[in-house]
Image (cartoon, rainbow, N blue to C red; front, side, top):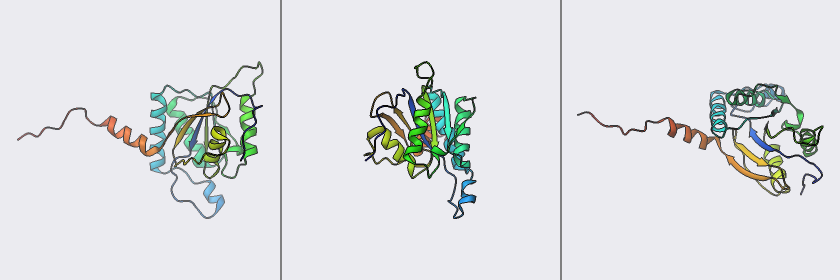
Amino acid sequence: MYCLPLSLNYLMNLYFLRHASAGTRRSNPVVDARRPLDKEGKQQCMFIGNFLNSLNVQFDLIASSPLKRARQTASFVGTEVGYEAEILVTEALSPDATIQQFEDLLSHLGESEEGQPELENVLLVGHNPNFPAFLGIVCSSGKANLRMRKGAIARVDVTRRPGTLHWLVDPRILRGVYRKATRRSRRKTSRK
């Protein structure tokens, strides 16, 4: 069991986004690191962006793993929500990142010069297997077993310990909502 130290003083909403669909994993790690999003992944980014826009979420910072599929997810979602600053690329969100690296990233994000929180909403884009573990650590002292499919997004309020998971949305839900919203509101009638 591992819990982030209570001494970390950061007051923000963390949005955990697992990278969108990028096709089949490659056996060569060098080739796999350069694997781009596929058509479905790009569509998932659009759904996520529309969902976040409907909630009026604006990010103060977007941080991403250095792998191409995560950077593309961060970029596409950032574009959809109107994020214009540079995306922070960090090894602390890579697939082999440790809990200590993640903790160091959060403490760095929580630092401010005047003692006031500088960042209110932060989007973190990463990978399995460690990303759901990081989410579980922030929410429940490492006891939670949360499943994050590709393209899933979660919002955690970390103003108190442990953080409060407000929602976790699967990409299949977003796809269903989008399809339902884009259908006609009028019934089909036959002309005979």
